[in-house]
Amino acid sequence: MRFRHPDGSLVHLAYCTNVHPAETLDGVRAQLRDYCEPVRRRLGRDRLGIGLWLARDAARALISDPAALRELRADLDRRGLEVVTLNGFPYEGFGAQEVKYRVYKPDWTDAERLTHTTDLARLLTALLPDDVREGSISTLPLAWRTPFTEQDAATARGALVTLAERLDALEELTGRSIRIGLEPEPGCIVETTADAIAPLTAIREEIHRRAATTTPAAPTATPAAASSGTPAAARGGTPAVPGATPDGATTTPADADADASAPAACRSAAVAAATQSPSVPRPRQAAQPTRPGSNGLGDHAAPSAAPDRIGICIDTCHLATSFEDPHTALDALETAGIAVPKVQLSAALHAEHPQHPEVREALSAFDEPRFLHQTRTRTAGALHGTDDLGPALFGDTLPDTTPWRAHFHVPLHAAPAPPLTSTLSVLRETLARLVGGAHPRTRHLEVETYTWQALPDALRPRARSQLADGIAAELTLARDLLVDLGLKELP
Image (cartoon, rainbow, N blue to C red; front, top):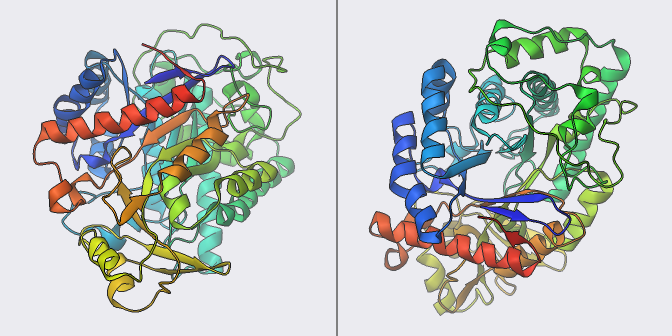
């Protein structure tokens, strides 16, 4: 779904397909038929955005078979679906009977995480709609919290710097800009937006250091790039995407001098890595208006656009679970110059009086064996937590004189029955700050309620049609929030 912001820029709204647990390419294509297209039809729209989740096996199948990638793109077009964002957090096994801690592997200390995310970026350049040049991918916030040494931190930082270099090269070859958002999550090394500032700043500084100490080498065209039918980005002459904000939160291809982003050796390796991807032929892009205050030529005095390649993906359920104030969090990110490539619209489970037996009983219905439901409470400025809802309920480990919040993505449009509720108000506040101002600070919004099949029995959909109805209702609520903020829905 597309919306026109009052400043003229486009804002995209999608729902994440990790609610449909397919691990193979055949399974992904079945999702489009069985769920995504029916949801679009329920909404009465010509076009529906989906935040595609491609597990390892599905991604590898597409990377190794250009014909399969072309078929997937054609299938999306035929069904009125479009992809501007991917969920790169789960790697595989997200549909297993027990996911729990497995979802955090491989982490950013493992080379496979870099390989997989690079593959996703290559695929996204081919899946983007013809009139869209910017894509986003959400990813693991470095690693689960333990163990994580200083060496682990350096390894993860190095992997993300390498990824930024590869994304620069990929844009030069395809004309499409892909950005990554670390998704803070309770229990991870980066649990909160505040935790994200130091590592993301360190990544930016490392990219600047490399750029300042080396002489960049111009990338060389390769057969893979030449056969793609997609124009390489002419850095100085690429027009900016309308609506980019002066604070850099929505960096565009025109805002970059990618040739200055990496050492010669790294640049050569990055180009080689980027050119391995299959491509879908595309027409040349029409020039678009420049943003206010921009000459459309990019800032060649800047060391690189690569720092903005790696930003933050704000999940509003996670934000609420950790009791972060949206205004404080977003102010801190803006002050630090941290980009927000993507936001996941979600709501957590809230219990105002966890000391009451009836509240404990209601919460216990959400204590299920498939996913972790990290639980938090805040007392006198201190945050207390458990890794799952069960230990909070039965382990006497959390203070119960203050409200509890659990990491359980409850449907946006249907708050749990009293005495429980959801944190939809946190979503509203965050969305208003991000897209309700003079310019949007992000343009990619994704409803991510992957826990439909983990809801208590009485709330769980029993048929495909019921799940499609529920997803459509969530998207309708999100659409109404955007319209209330002054955005105009497009056909």
